[in-house]
Image 1 (cartoon, rainbow, N blue to C red):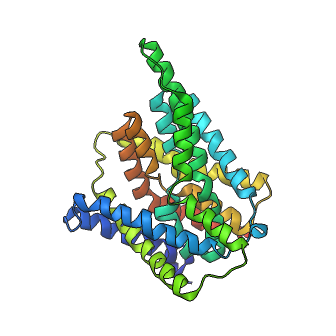
Image 2 (image 1 turned 30 degrees about the horizontal axis):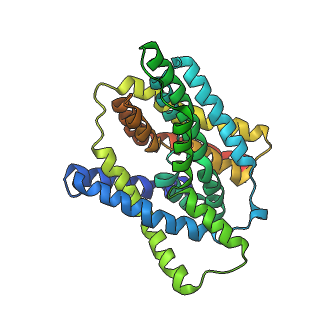
Image 3 (image 1 turned 120 degrees about the vertical axis):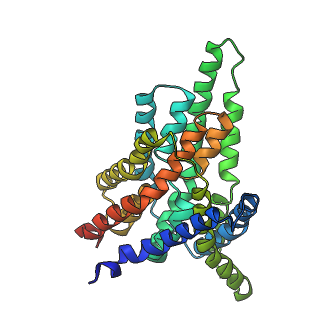
Length: 321
């Protein structure tokens, strides 16, 4: 088989070509900064919900295996805790530790896994994605609030309200364009009903538009991401996200007896670059914003190499079938 015809390259090439076109569009000002927010709203409020609801509307609870969720987040939680312990207990440490474990499962992961592993692989990814933000963002918010309270107390100020902030994180993670349509689609599937063609076809068309627009938007964002002055610390964070997390998730899956396609999708999900929610948290707490942005950009650029390596290794393992 010609190397360029290998399934890994056949899946990765269109993903990163579309991201590269987005970078070009940003540099040439074809998509100006004022339009990025509108494109983001289009992707997150219309295209993603259509794709996720339609995908999960035919999946029944009895066919779902929740072991990958337990296994994945055990590994991610251990790495998150170890990263915070290594850097010290403070708000900056919590944000950077989250950057080292939070994957871009939606904007990049959905289209990549769909191309590489089909509908069955996508169900495993979406099962992870349905609780990804809920578990990691809520955990990070609790740590951030505790660290912020400690820092404020040390300065003699009033501590922030932990319960209120945690509840806000939980609410925002549940009422969100990613988990909400996944849950709604699953609930619809349990009724035994089938989407009528007049509804299914528009959802299919909207879902088909998600991939290219989302990837171009990733490229546009990447094209405006400054890296100067942050390369070395961003490399450490990228190494944690792109290499160490997939290794730990792979070991965790092995310990849980998870093999085959499920393990492959779990490890690929862990190897995805840093997701945008990390920057939103950094912006909210006004800590490490520039470094977080640089890490997201570097992680995405180097993912072309790291994802290729991870996916090739997985394709050669006998247990991936």
